[in-house]
Image (spheres, rainbow, N blue to C red):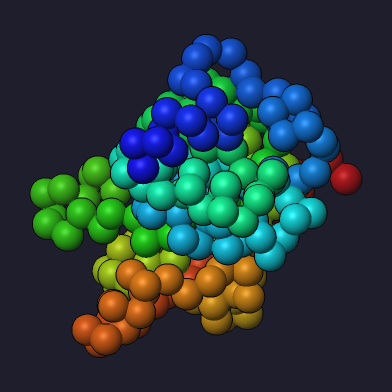
Length: 211
């Protein structure tokens, strides 16, 4: 991982600078860009990138060991459609991601902050969803997965209260795992512990008058 951060980061890493990212320049093409927030060890990231070469993946994670692991997987599998940012995802969204530029956002197993007094630290809150909506193009897909039922219910309710997203579940609830999300070791461990996994799949709606 140390070698990866030293030798591979300059190839696929994004330095935490100021100014908006130029996605066509960053990836060398104008394919749709999917943002993954908090990729952990990058297992789902490289598998999704390998399965969808027609999409670009902007992967964000603050923990360097996970960044190093993903860099090694990118090298191992020869993936040219992944770029990595090692910084706070909310700050990246606020200051570096252009409006209407994302074709998708994926957030898998975010920290549930179990204790009630820590719930305000949870990522998926109304203000965050508003920020996502500004950065996502019409029709873009927001996909969130968690194995913490109370957090799943909160996220469902937050998104239900947003005029910018529609839940693609016919019941307005949770969806089956989409084929693009590979099951992870983390998820399999949770299932062994008896945890259900909840997938929320929502679409960025077209703004009224924007037809």
